[in-house]
Length: 100
Image (cartoon, rainbow, N blue to C red; front, side):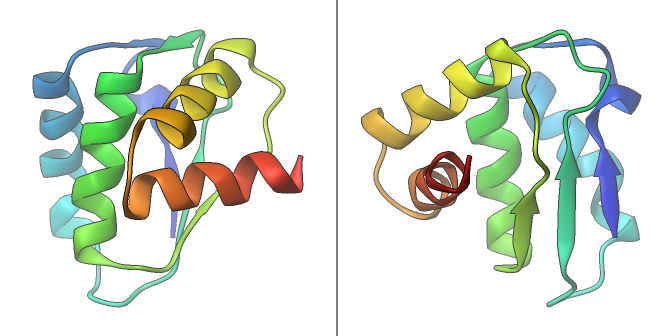
């Protein structure tokens, strides 16, 4: 399954909004399903939104892939999460950045 984040808006900010976005897609997810997160069409994201959304997604399935992007806001957010956090979201962020 591919989750197109632009469906939640072009500017993704705040933990509550990230939680709300996850709750919207949760009924569509199958346990253990492989999920691709697509940032195409998103102008700006904040670490809090991405952290909340990915934390909940990774609790549901460990098979998450972040699709390639050259969006400066996304890249900066993932760098912050990779450096400031511990755990699955930081690991996923580091893996994505290393592959760039």
